[in-house]
Image (cartoon, rainbow, N blue to C red; front, side):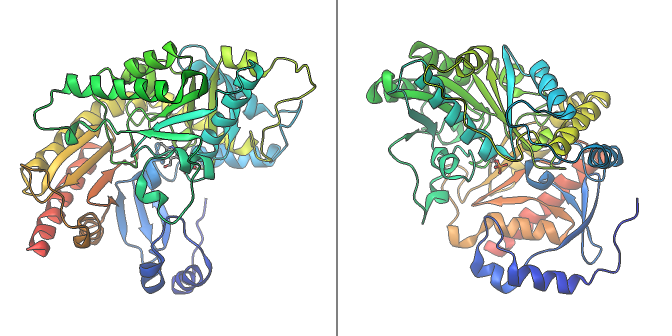
Length: 459
Ligand code: PLP
């Protein structure tokens, strides 16, 4: 398939700078520098408008799991467009890929999570979960059960509700959030626990905090607990051993539903199709997912619910009400065809096995950076990793925000052909899952050099 040529990249850069409102952007710097225009891609690499190649250490945005430029995906997408590019799934219509993908997700999801609702991404999958949960409790006559509990530094999306559930306080600056319905408990970040506290005590304390919050709000008022198996945008926080199972037990005790936000962790990033059960040994009531579901080739998100919840929300309504929730593009056939093909490719090339194997090498190689004087923590699992930079490794004191250490490291990496994501004083890595040993060696060596240069900058 031929790719477009003779595009005036300088003009594109200008058009973008003048007219495109970028998501999550610091306009003060954007207005000066504009954007890096990405014009091409190939497996784990992206290529800018001037033809420079970069190893993409962030997989687009934690999502290009099967890698870029997959011709089989392109063909499946084109084929679906030729067949039937769109039909609404409202009421009693469906399309072949929407039905087939729902069945496939039900097969892959843990426990009795057998029913799938589609949206266009992770935020909408979480908003959908809230609406479903409220409808569910209304159906059961438990109309006071509406409150949501989530964690500081959890990230759940950017719609009004998903951002309210998000606990990254920086993301709330300058915006309003829903404060009456959403309550945040603290983040289970083992690196930041008191120096004299054991991991076991730390876990006990965090689990107790959830129970205390439910009791404070009143179990009859609490509907759900939202948590990512590993917090992503909040700094790749892996909770202490047993945390998820035990918080699920607390939820069960008080009739609170557990929503596992697997927008990042599903579809291979941790070496499993879903991480809740296979990596953390618990089966939630609802899983939300997006990103790796299509490897980012097309927008698609899903809210996967248990048989029990489905039974309740699908019961005939005494007062004639129906489940009035859905979007024009719910179950879009082209996105669903991409999802099906993505899973087929992942299964055929055994991508989860590759991640379990190569992801361990990635973790171990990244941990060699701990000998650098500002690298305080290297954490995460498999292809979901984070480097936390600090001023003092003993006290874990932070480097002054004005130093923009995460940005500096990212810029030095980019100058050397590697894209990593700055996250305040941290750098996050979530590469395409097709990464090989050679790519990992390049990535880690480039990071080392970039951190060393940054240390020089900061002197
Ligand atoms: N949930 C998690 C854990 C995420 O990381 C994200 C996005 O990064 C979202 C939800 C929101 O997904 P989207 O940006 O597709 O709406």
